[in-house]
Image (cartoon, rainbow, N blue to C red; front, side):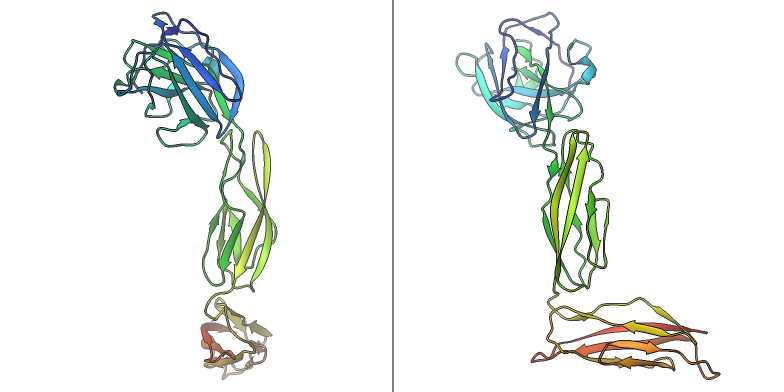
Length: 338
């Protein structure tokens, strides 16, 4: 933002009211340093304020502009010509058109977020905001004919979640969900989530992620966000829905030890009609058997000179009772060690 000459206002006093806000600025200026009155009033994020002024040059086609300046808390009571600690935050002036008497009135929404040009006043939540009005919109307020400062104010409140309160995850698919929140001050602590999650789903740094093969069900959770102003809880429901096609929940490579009891049960997920007819294809280590009724490989690998250690590749499959029948299969590997 180009350096600007700070001019004092002569005429009507500057004022900002807390409700139905009006910031009035006299348009006649002198070359002396302006005085800035710090306000104790804070505006809730999203509040609409009306900025008005009188005595400005008439501009109906080439607008003057309103720009937001942010200053550290230590200097809001005294802006001067060397105030390099003040930075523009809107990047582009918000347009202002004056009437035939040189007066204007325009409404904007105050925000602690990055917002679009033309309708919002964006403030850093950690520093007070100051409104700068200049009459030469196209030359970034360098026209000294009439310039003005408003009093300082802050934007606060609106701590809460911007993400939804529900999410649905399909069995067998990766469907991450990201929590998000806003508040002022904007330095939000990590969002916490409590409650039982579906098997296979984990929570870390604001994100629910993973893949679940659990039965369709709803999981009630509580999300919590906090900052210096307080804490907000949100009731959140995570729903697991059935996959459109049937499948078998995958299992990692498992190790079976000669002489030790072994058991591995398989589960189906998705849309199908019970009962299921299970099958195991391939060679199992000696001593292990597949139970079709329970979809379980179990037993104790026997120890003899004929036992071969290493990987045993097996395909587990099932058919359901739909017409036509639906089916699914999964390849597994059992690593037999002595």
